[in-house]
Length: 227
Image (cartoon, helix red, strand yellow):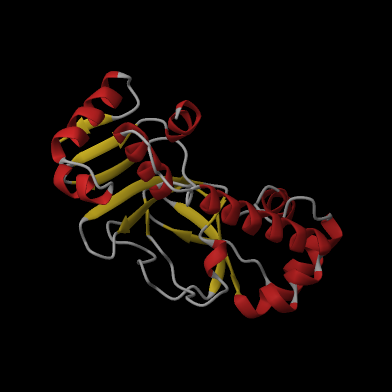
């Protein structure tokens, strides 16, 4: 059983809550609870793609598999979310409040959920929380804007790297995308042969690893830096 002191130490390390005083955290905890929920490792997703996003969800300990299936069903991406983390805080508001990905616990995990109503009525009253939230949303928007730059006159390799950066805009570490060569070629508007050659060059440079209908990026952070 976690002690009150341990709980406050945990809360101060969570995204959006960093910088809040013990007094503020104690008040928030007394008003909305901030209960820590435990979930064991599962084979099926705890959160499914397109589920309504009605809560702010803090992953406090453990790891979860994040999986996204494209709308046309032609490719799937996988990556790991490591605590402490927030699960799609930008989808709590807006025109389409749904989770973009599915989330499956890879091990025993703990998390805290806060209702959208409580975010508005209580958390948003904190200046630090608001600033943290706005900074996080601004960062997400700016990254996505950068990835919308046109690819005119880019090489095939640059198109592939841009495609990967767009699909894994928020992820670091190892990521995977299950996609056929012909599908990837269609997405970047290149021939299958040119796409294959470019992927082999990227594999030679140890930026990606190629398997049957699977592209593995061992280090997404390195890919961003070197591309």
